Length: 392
Image 1 (cartoon, rainbow, N blue to C red):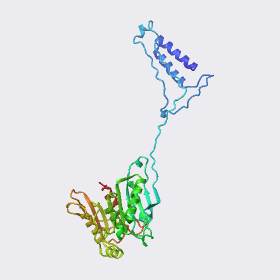
Image 2 (image 1 turned 120 degrees about the vertical axis):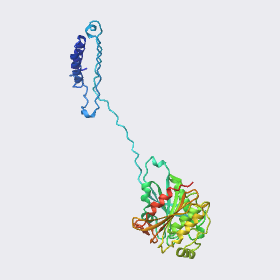
Image 3 (image 1 turned 120 degrees about the horizontal axis):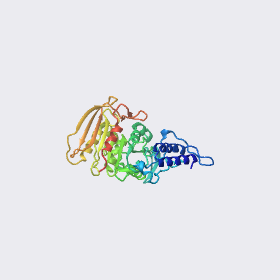
């Protein structure tokens, strides 16, 4: 112990025994200050760094002086009062900083892939949103997006801006690519009989691709959806009707109903005059949301109404009367929205008639082809509808 400190503590003890408590207290206080001062000559203890008062990490020992309640008569007979010696602090204990583990999200992914099935290889692009390690264990929704004729996955993604919504709301988007080898215009072959059946042609290929992505990633099987534009919209309607065990809801933009054509000539007739769905459903109809411009010169708007009629016929029991609302987009495009509900009151069909709109994705970006930025945001409305209809 520091000699000066020892001398002051001895003095405090002597003053306490003599009853001079005020002087003893003063000696103890001086001893405490000396205990934090420099070491005596010959001592090798390194003094601790002097932190500021604001840091609050200097711990001083508590000194308790226990005094007899009757000092005037007791000190002659009593044992010396107890003096608790101060603890000499030569080192400041290091306080471990708490380890903060931050759940840093993995970056988003926009990847190219190829999928082989039944003798055919299909190229695709897949968008996966940024996800934290905690979120990565939770299954996310998946939307299969089918482009229109002359389009490709990158073009379709840019035009619909679906990846922006996927980034914000945490879902995956799959964009398969049709090849000119299968169709000179890059269209999905919705109008050929072999591509309108379960277990055959393009429906089987696209369903298998969807299941493969579901197996490779954390996808919620109850929230898998399909949407498309034009020929892609027609193929989306086929997939929804042939694979209700995979898809939970369908989005069709400027498309045609399944069964409206069986070859190229009947396809052209349906596109210009409007076709009627003739093929039966595989089980109960899925919820469907339809967008169609009433000025569409490529695919007649009667096709959108035919998709709605086919979906209505796939539900058992009469529901409430359709609810019709009029509105206008931020870009001043008018629309009529008709909502159909089943007997239990659950909305299962939405039909958006876009007044004055042509053959283009409503509310899309000019960075992609076949888009109408002035229209209502079809991508956002489709996603809202999809997430309200998980597969049951």
